[in-house]
Image 1 (cartoon, rainbow, N blue to C red):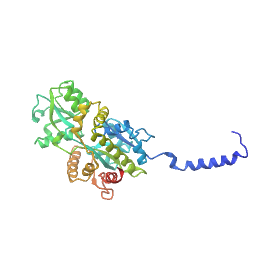
Image 2: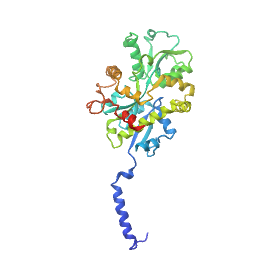
Image 3: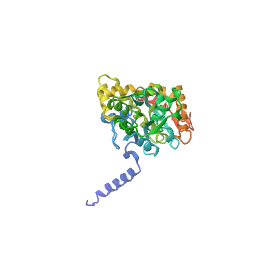
Image 4: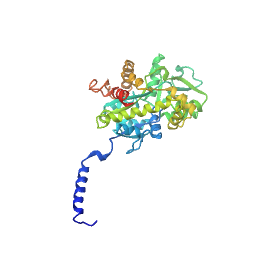
Length: 358
């Protein structure tokens, strides 16, 4: 470009603006956060919300809910174990996780349960071949399932309730997909597995000589699915708004499930995100996974006496089975009420959404 006397002042002004921009965060876009999620009925809501353009799960893009809250949410979809690793390694701000699995990472990464999404009510099950009619017949047999997870917890708790000793049984570590596939194919020795949906439904559908010996309906409310956010992420600029946007996204899908006009199409969309299950199967899935579909239901979980009693059982199990190297401190309420907690059930952000975010 030619330099002339008249252009020089404009160049100087432009240089000043460029320097100013270098120190001004306004052009950096909204604060960005990431949520790791895996296929599960109440967690697949976030993938469906992306498909419905309520949010845009790609980094650097925003849907209307994100714009409303002034944040950018990046959705990181992976299998469940990978999500746990991702969260523990500080590679995401929040994660879809169970109350039990949140304990171990909280020892090194202070964590906050901000949104209960559902509870297992039959979605975790011990499936056996028809020749097994009583729990005692499993003594001496390998029972396959993912060790140190809700599968083993469900198995052990049911043994306790049936008056059985855990030491008499051989819970054997195996990925749930592999355990389910081996049983479905009739592999020798796979007479009993403990898995979660979709593996429960798939196994029962594909192998007709199997049945449920027991499931999580015997321990209602003990397996809680939730969104957990790192305290350090909540402390960032935009952290509470990020949680608010996640909360609104979840309830936006629940409203579609409540509306007869959109319920079936939403179930189909969830099914596409959840192992490609059809409408009929998804109708059963959402009965076996009870959604906490309103803020009131979520707040009851975060503040209820029953949750504290449940967490005592879960803590005893995790320490006793060496899932956590030491016992995490679990707290309830806002940060000032539980200053030293590793893992905290905090209704503050859910109440804020309930009052202002609708």
